[in-house]
Image (cartoon, rainbow, N blue to C red; front, side, top):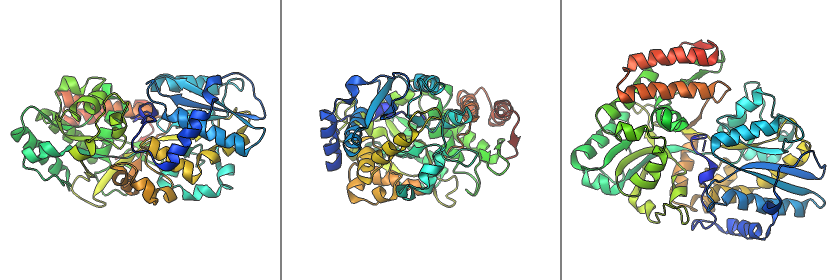
Length: 472
């Protein structure tokens, strides 16, 4: 989130990616020969020999990665399972409308697909509503499940301990920086900050020595939505403390944590960025289109020194994307976001992603899981990660040299998986996220001090969780 998630697969790289590997080329060739999408439609009822697959289709007509990939897997599946058919049901809509449409479909066996694409940002809402089926009986018999990294397995694990989705990749976050701006500011082009102070020091140097550019972008406030909470605040929060406990949620008591010192320190970092005018103008920072502005204008045009952002940015710069930037890997450097004081493990990332889930009212759950198995062969998984600029959650693919070299930056962001964190995306999380965004906005505009923003967060947290809170 896709955050979608803070991000969406709708920004996936198009089928003309110059970083495409040989396995993906074969998949696309199959996709072009397939006629799957011409007969898409939700229909009603269930055919025992047909698996219905619902997914989010890009709202950009030039981007067809998901469509092409699923059409190719459909052809493979039907060839391997004579007499069985796949009906692809694309939903072309922005994230919020996609979530609404999916929930409407899941309510009735007449409209429920057999397989649905779920954003980990909201999957627990569908689990709590009883819309999804636990996959544990299938996973216990599926040998490939052992290839999935443990942290990724938790992305679709609910409070009941059961798993409700198979992740098709993940994302990580770090610091993107403009090497040309760094040279002008007298900063090293192999920059690797060790503490928050190092990040702020670089931003201050850029402000002093390179006029006319924005030194540092940290997403903030409600207009940026989950991008503010996930790319911005949580990348700071999870770098505080000693890393032994989740600073947002206590999994032992199953309660949400009120604002502690780490929470306040994260807010203070955001306040410093905007109080010292190290970030975009507040009006621009609170523009709902700030993510598009950063990816499509500020970074490509050399107007931003440092961006705290996600692994998926190159999708926006590929041929046909509308913001083509073929030499981005020469212009930009990558650095891990450091922990607050450089304490172990020294770097921090936060991850999200999407999973494939089987609705509780699916007519053909067994066939649906067989389709998941087809999607998640090692070759198909590798092709998908490369096509979508996703980060591998399969250990065998992550270790494959052809994956690691498929696109600039992919190894860097994959290596962050070992120290990444997943949001406690339980049913209350969307409201908790909104409370975080409000606290950030208060210190960004100067309408609230760090202490007041933290107190307001605690009150909003209690309301959002039914007073299911504990101390920091």
